[in-house]
Image 1 (spheres, rainbow, N blue to C red):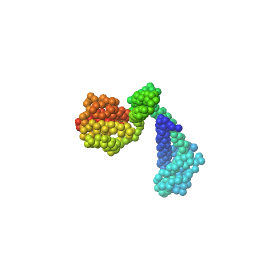
Image 2 (image 1 turned 180 degrees about the horizontal axis):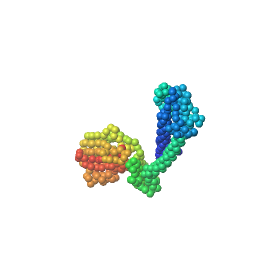
Image 3 (image 1 turned 90 degrees about the vertical axis):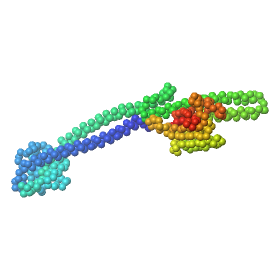
Image 4 (image 1 turned 30 degrees about the vertical axis):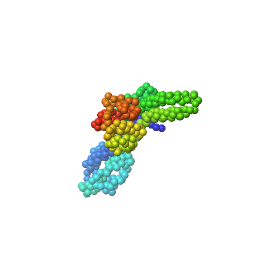
Length: 448
């Protein structure tokens, strides 16, 4: 099952959030636990200092008064216990709280070094040991041990963990809720585009709106161009079919009359009319399909195609000895169907040969104009010749079917109109200007 963008974003961010909060909770828990243990060790260390302060020497032994600095040491089951051991490990003194309990003095895992504290967990107690060489007691070695129950510290840690868990759960819930709101707001333009596409499918909308974020403007523009392309294609087919029906009407009438006459003498005429109908069908279908190239196409390099077109067309005008200057980079390409590109270049280059006198210049370079985010700048192609040129008043008219600026030269007046239609299909532009060579300068922009 394929998941939508919203579900994917929520799942991914929830997993990342869960991992992050889990690691954060573990770090906080370990830090707090270490802090609690450090606090317990500090409390026991103060008790050790207190016992050392009240200890008195009696020969090579130590004695302690009945009144101890920490009252809990004198209370049974108080949770705080103390003892003093000699170098052999024998207990020479223990607090009343330890005497009334069943706590055993366990050995430490760490090496006992006089003058240093050893802190370990023994069962349900924290145990702190401090060994010291008592100079006043014939430099005997004594070990002061203080123990405290872990229960209150564990309760403090459990309370912290409970509060931490509740806080992280609440933070996660709030984050997930905020995430739903943020993802919904972030994907709103996509839903808007989806609704507008459905309206276009239902026929209640002709084009997408323009109120999209920069990341979607290129997509919206491409969809609009694609829809326009399909509309132009349908219109082109309709016109072609109408022209086809009109073109076949007369040949069909001639063939029908000859069939009605029953004479076999005009077979040559009938064959001529049939050939004319076949040629008409091929021409109209070819013209109708000229705009059917999909807008979803790969890039086509310009230099090889321009070279082939110039080489082929120059042979038809070999008597004119026209000089052709081509300035097109080897890696320049456009996102146009190759057949349509050859149609565009063929018509423009042939017109340059036809109307130019002695020189033609062809150039291509990326446009310097700003474009939408995510789109490449269009490719700008120019075709110049040194012919008679086109009057400014006629430059718009020559882009329509059948219109010609020069009636003395053979032609049907459809070349530039075909070029204009194809360029418009791909979202490009065509303009006619005066060339510094004295003739025509044709600019064509195509997508890359």
